[in-house]
Image (cartoon, one colour):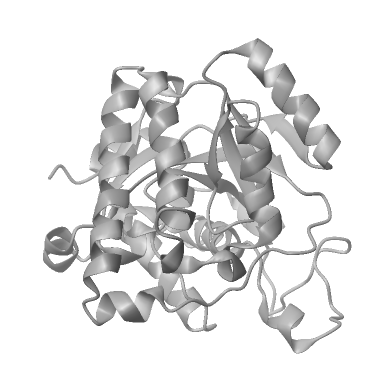
Length: 313
């Protein structure tokens, strides 16, 4: 329970950005995912008592003027913002124990759906749990439980990983594609690709437990190839974005395994040959005009009581 002074003065909660290590984008297609949160990027929400509802923008990071309707509608980091806001409300009203951890990602996604945001549960699960999480969104489990099976893992299972991004991206790819509708229509090509992408997350889970990072590197490359090369018909370059693809190509030019962290905008990379290869990655990214930094994984944000309460299925 919160101290009275914290309730009176207000409270602050943070939700971290997530990296989809394996399984993207099968979480929207009854698939599986392996994701973790990173400490260097986050959304913060502050809540304080007020006689009226007031949403106060950050003086520097939250825009109040937009050059177009497209920029206004593009709520970047929406899942982290809503997750942080939910955590504020859970603690402010002291109801955290009344709402199952497994159901909180659904609440966040439902709030975003009201804004017209099309997404899956993966980001929300990673941000609610924090740390490293394996997720199974199979139809059987979703229909039975109303949510997937989520297993927190030890973040120390992860090898050193790197984040690559463009400081001033000019092309982040288009938002829409026909993949979802084709999947709903029973397109065998799309269904088979998504099944293989989901299998990568399962195989990656096993590779992490065995600390088989050579296998993990192969799986990461295959995840990107399925999404954009061997199965380029699924999404195509217009959706993926040329800058996003270029970041992967630069990493691979020095033998580094790489894939998107999500739908684009950044790339997660693994150097299977160690620090010498990481130096080559830094040089290649610098020459290409990209930023690269080693990832600091954020730990689990769940309390001991919440971890104990997780469903065992």
